[in-house]
Image (cartoon, rainbow, N blue to C red; front, side, top):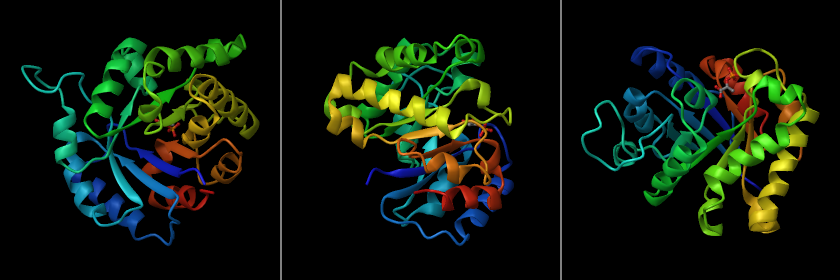
Length: 253
Ligand code: PEP
């Protein structure tokens, strides 16, 4: 079975003390993960090491950085390299979140560079894509998201793309309380899998986990995750509440 993943995106929230307590509360929850199920915590940079220490030794739990820079090292004040991220125990890097695209002007081309440096340095990209409301309003979301994949991912080899996790996050559903319906999520996920299959073949496409993100909560996770092409969720707001996120973990297939 394809990997099923509950990924928490804490964004720029929580003090160290709060973050540490939240992690303890989630990790001490009743969830029993099967071997194909994973939980990933995308925590702010200063907490990567603390989070890595707390989950170490548990194969189902992983840590992600929320971003990285395109260069290996050097005079780039304020940036964080893949070597730094790997050295504190993170295995994943979230790339292309709509907030990075919108507030920090990250283009498809820049994201292709970030995907390359992450893969070249034995980390796994959790690559986000998704359309804004006007694009959904004009029913052109399929072409929009396809272009994001083409321009940031389709230079990768078969071996490289199989290491990726993709998250479909319609921007109109992020932090708005407005979730895509399970049918809308399934339709887009099936489209993405078709696009991946055309470029890389069915076997590769069938193995890439595609997560849904956008106002996932304890109350809607089960229905969303039960769709055949939805392999879990990338969760913002609800991942800051231990009980809510616990329900989301338990909703994994
Ligand atoms: C996100 O930030 O990736 C996200 C999906 O946020 P929320 O769950 O709050 O909509």
